[in-house]
Image (cartoon, rainbow, N blue to C red; front, top):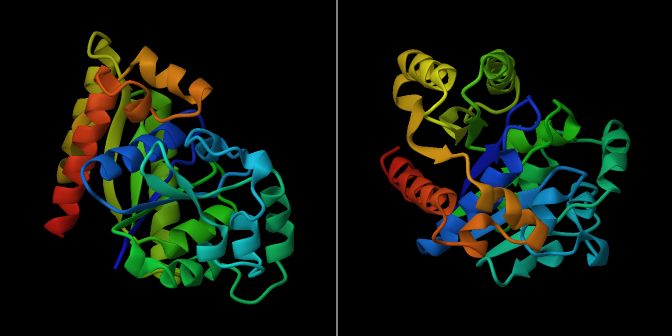
Length: 256
């Protein structure tokens, strides 16, 4: 039975997609069976996994509208070692189309249940806004992994996300919890980042992952080659950190 996790943060530009694809590749590298679901209409996680969103016959859009199953719509990201349920621009239309349908918040959850036995982890890359798409992701998930930069405004965004998760937990998904906070794009030379990191550890304690993802040029370059950094340059500091994070994730989930 797969563990389903949203990679979410209501603040944009914090490395959600980078974290999703590199965690997926890292988990595959340590022997886990992984499905990555791209819920963002921009389709960056799809392209960043080496899958051309323009050539996909079926996407998560078709799954949400129950025109296809995940088994029919998924593709294999061969170089990365995991499966992808891709996205494309038409997913923007799903926002409007889902408003009037039954079970609109739980369609992704039901679709995942049909393939849950085939995977160890399902990772969902959510858009930055709290939309019907994000809500589907949160309703389907066992927990949320929150990538965040150690900056002042990131703390404000975190407060909003925690409140959203509490509301979804209370009303739609009793299983939902924050699995952990991942510090990304971290530069230990910047005093403010060290201070915010300490604040996070003091306030959230063991909810903060031990692994820290450093600011790394190779991770930033990797998407232009259509690959996660873990695959593009396995020896880069950022890639090594994401594999360590994948190992920490497996340990944390095993002990839950």
